[in-house]
Image (cartoon, rainbow, N blue to C red; front, side, top):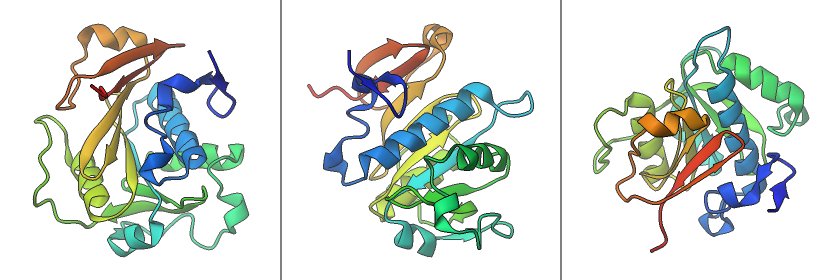
Length: 203
């Protein structure tokens, strides 16, 4: 099975999520999803962490969001803020403990942190039990040409496109026995190296 060097896990697991047909830079999305899985599995300071990444169409995303606090990434050069850089990834893990979303450009620069998403929820229909972070992800991806990656404090990662959940990722295999997918359509389930992905069926 082909292994993606970026993620060190089989390419098949994320090939649908990172599909170029969505118009998002697949390498950037791979890095973001990998980082989301790391945050979900590791947590921070011994506790679970929830956060959100909004990827691509960053100008429009910034227009429809605002900072909750002074932006800790403001003023730093882009070459230090690349999502592929190990130092930046550790910085993101620390900042993920704060409220708000990360905005990531299509070419992989983390432009801003601690963003409040200001988008209307009209027409958004999410399953019961998903909170405001998931609603914000659905709203911003309906309003813009972005994809949102949400890390839940329950350690599940959900990927949103055009206002709906397109994939759910369960980092630890033991969760499968007690996990119920929130996607409207039951799909295929993959497991590999303690990462589980639930992806909509093509059928």
